[in-house]
Image 1 (cartoon, rainbow, N blue to C red):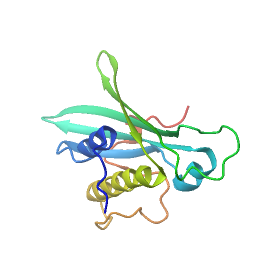
Image 2: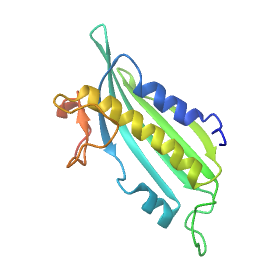
Image 3: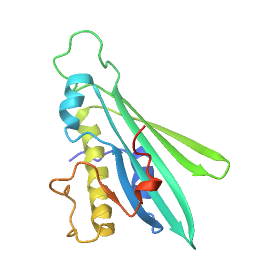
Image 4: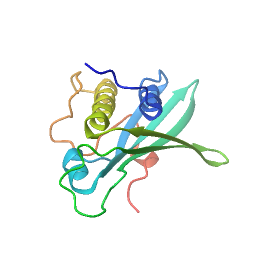
Length: 162
């Protein structure tokens, strides 16, 4: 079995999701049918909000991740299964001075590698989500019936609506 190469985007997201000070998280944008969207457009992504709290000081971090196949939406395609591409992760931390950004980029060699990364993030997200959400049993699967996931972040601190 081939080992996946290190991926800085994956490592950063997993680091944030395992942060001991993480007290809340929410999905802002996610695609329940990522593989189908990727198969059609050669691109997919997600966004999450994270609330860290340490010594009564809160840190609000938003993460936007987008994956785009090199040949996305060009010409005629049978599939994007073998297409390599780029992953861009933008981490935005809300500070008293404004929003501080960090951009991390990486590459993937095909859809199988990309969705291997997606599965690792999905598993880590739901594991942490379930640990923060009262009344939800432990596990790594999505919560049935939920489309928007939020735990530990008050609605007033989420960027919902326009």
